[in-house]
Length: 206
Ligand SMILES: N[C@@H](CCC(=O)N[C@@H](CS)C(=O)NCC(=O)O)C(=O)O
Image 1 (cartoon, rainbow, N blue to C red):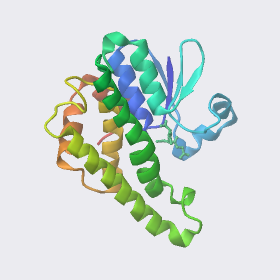
Image 2 (tube, rainbow, N blue to C red):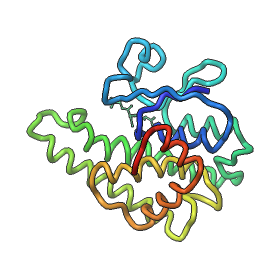
Image 3 (cartoon, rainbow, N blue to C red):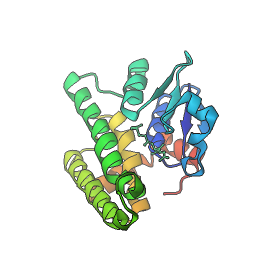
Image 4 (cartoon, rainbow, N blue to C red):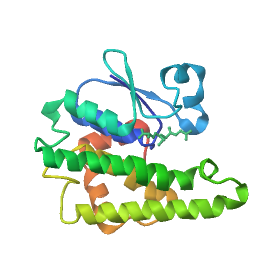
């Protein structure tokens, strides 16, 4: 298994899952801000020019955080990355999908890449402001969902916790405060060996 990641990007969610599974895997540093996902070699593997990219043991590339999360959970039932109960498993995937498609792609990306959303540079500031609104709307909704829980869903670590880590740490990048339960969850997750190892490999300091 080989993960192409960019430090601190959404690929961190996959990196944490691979650490949780505990089987040997390779990582390839692919800093998107330096254009590393736009080289001909990378585009041959992933024409979407994005991370995360997972190369499966059979050599087939897989992209999209929810699909990779589902794949890794299914392949490694012993790691219990999805709850055995179908109701809770669906809740976990619902959270991963909401984080990937709304909080990340609609909210945070509007702030980080206003040029992908606005027609004119004059609109960048209000596009970014709208992105932060959507990002915080998402974090607040998730904050309510995890209230009173140690883990995002059910009674053990799942794919939803890994996704929550990468998106909630981005509040620091955007210089906005995390809602209380999201903050407490991030601090708890940062004590897990898997998260510590992924942070150390990626060189993350918050
Ligand atoms: N829908 C994709 C989103 C992937 C994505 O947007 N990744 C960002 C990093 S967090 C990226 O590679 N961006 C490249 C760029 O902005 O140039 C997923 O869930 O995996």
